[in-house]
Image 1 (tube, helix red, strand yellow):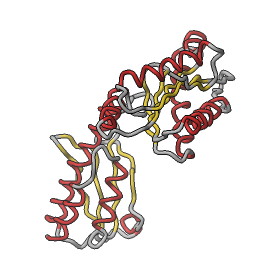
Image 2 (image 1 turned 90 degrees about the vertical axis):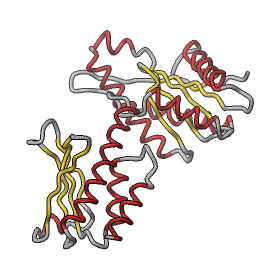
Image 3 (image 1 turned 45 degrees about the vertical axis):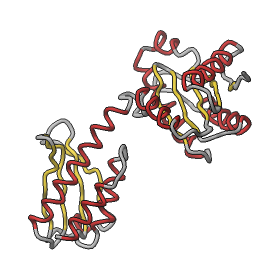
Image 4 (image 1 turned 180 degrees about the horizontal axis):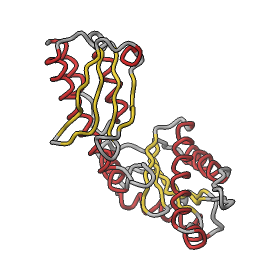
Length: 275
């Protein structure tokens, strides 16, 4: 039972919000001494329909089923999936562990829904404001960039809201992938409508501008076409660097003013105003 308790303690130490995959991989690493293999399935719209979400590196649970045991993933009265475990461990002890794993996975699911934008899957405005408020307490120098898709109303008015949603989802994906290539810690969120915000651990105007240009060009070079329409998109970016003794509201307002300048002076550009 001690090894079960050790895994539970490891799971309890996972910070929130984390990620479903991160939780599962932590579970895999910490339980490998007694769980040879496992596969997790999440229900779709009903318990009659499920999809395979994750299979452990050792795929014994798929290839050799002799010691497989199935446990329902359930928390707060909600059944949201099941796990198949290949182990020789006592069934009651494994059940205790899986019940605990279920609670943590379900909590992460609720946290994800509360902090994410439904359309794009990015963090939402509420989360990013909370994140900025937490950074304020650390008294760090960092940057924000506010991004606005140029003439976005045109997509909705001309092609319909489905095309507008397509552009928003694709530009979100493009920016996420681009930020992985920039060597700074970053958090991307949908700020509202066609606006996005990025928090970057950058304390230099030159480095911030270079990062903004990489993001702007990634949008410019993306083909947004669908089967019906040939589409391109551009974005305007406004940046600001957080200075000591500057309030969060003033800081965000500086980025907003930089964005306004970018849009008023031709769009499809990056601007960091001096104040």
